[in-house]
Length: 442
Ligand SMILES: [Zn+2]
Ligand SMILES: [Zn+2]
Image (cartoon, rainbow, N blue to C red; front, side):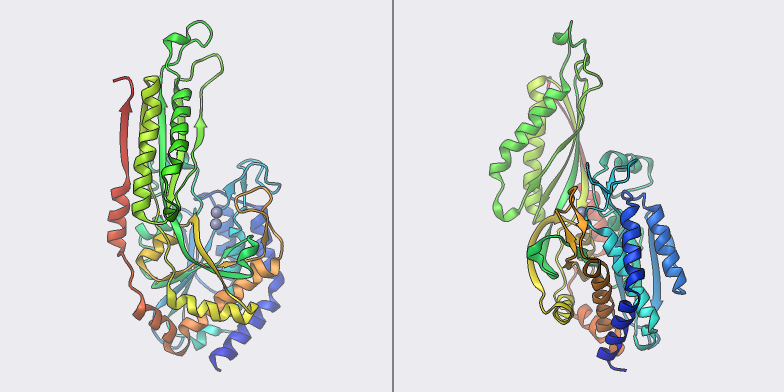
């Protein structure tokens, strides 16, 4: 069997099981779960991979699931197909979980459907009999950030160290047996077309700022209080004022939210809390913007005579996709759709960026969603494009990389120059964390 005959057989098998793949995507859509809490989705992945005769490992970085299948043609590199398990909290989304507010407004349900669809198709035609090396089917937790207060509590309790799913998987060694990885992210942007490759993605830091003032009777003795809410508001205004100093080429995004603004209305707020990200295209740009944000946050404490406790948390590193893998994907996208567009630089961040620092990765976008990402109108509009086409593209990548003594994967490894090792990555992330307490009354 030739490479192209094997691909055609797998694609036919995936088309034959399209209803099952769509059912997986729809089931996950209906049961959205927040990062590190995706137990039901993880169980679905485990069950599906087990039904294919694989032996998945579970509970990786809390909820991750990984199953490895070896090619029968001999040893070679290990290629991971990744699907992200998590949803995110979006107010007003019609399909949000009524208790947690979680909704699949980033389309990660489609990633898992595509990853499992590829596994189903490869299994159906016994494709591994024709391949070398290994393929890992890897469902990963917590790509979406946020939920910072809960996650930082986990850090203090010792159950997490880094705040993202892939970061934790790297730390715990679950990428140690993988040589290269890819995932396909759903897109709702018409300009991305059916398939697009980004040039790069932003990285980011996380920050929490806790203002402490002094509670007092809001009616009879406000002069004896120190209003932490107003201090936080001035901090937010300071951040908004420095936006004009951000350089376009750094693609900085700072978007704070107020997570606590007082205990009750007749008490001058003694505490207020802010969470924010500082995103940018380069580490230098992020560091520069981060120092300005710290200064703005302190200005609020200074104005009111409050104290601000600023904590900076490791986030995600910028993503740089592998050029050799991109060339293989471009061919597949052209076969499927007649085109593969250039998605340019994306100001969104992903912990696939962290993986891209230590091994070759690819993070293309494929269509099938409508509305706006992370918004209440986000929906899966075309299940064949969102769920089934990614399954075909991922399966084709497995064959392109692992056919013919895994010559494609060996070519990727020969050309790739990862910037970091797992150890230097962890040292970098551990160097980010910083805590500074600024007393504005002094
Ligand atoms: Zn997202
Ligand atoms: Zn996403």
